[in-house]
Length: 231
Image (tube, rainbow, N blue to C red; front, side):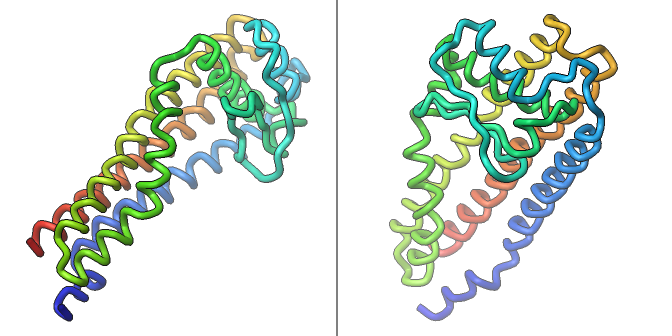
């Protein structure tokens, strides 16, 4: 049994390290881009909250509230609560970055109204992905340490659900950004030069989801390799 403890010192940790580096680079990029364009104020003078409420009204969405939530880049739309939450750095700011982020979150609300397929699928897969993220790694570790290959395989399957969830998330996020940019341009909320800044922020944010997917795929590959090695 004790040879299975080599799991903790396995060379495949390189895959985890690569994934972590990719995620850190993506995270640093989005923060850098947001910080840069948070200093560029839009000529319209509209705040993130103003833009969100206008976009929701224009889309005929009257049952979604806009609220402020603490933190930075903690913005999100909750279909269950019918709530669009904007972070401190977005809610009351009239920066190009804030408007871009607020519009992106409104994009999710519009997806919800239009019954956008990938969003529905992502919402339905949240419970399975949550379970997978919490118990998959412990099951694999226990299975490897005690030679319970079947248990380790269950852990791998559960972690696969996490990867699938992140894969489903990509079209949802990219589509929300496309909707945001289209509306900001169509309604003249941002001028052409301002719009390029918002696009930069949204592209950087999208890359964090791509990085998360790549990181999880590398982790899944590692788990599969470790499980097969101990069959």
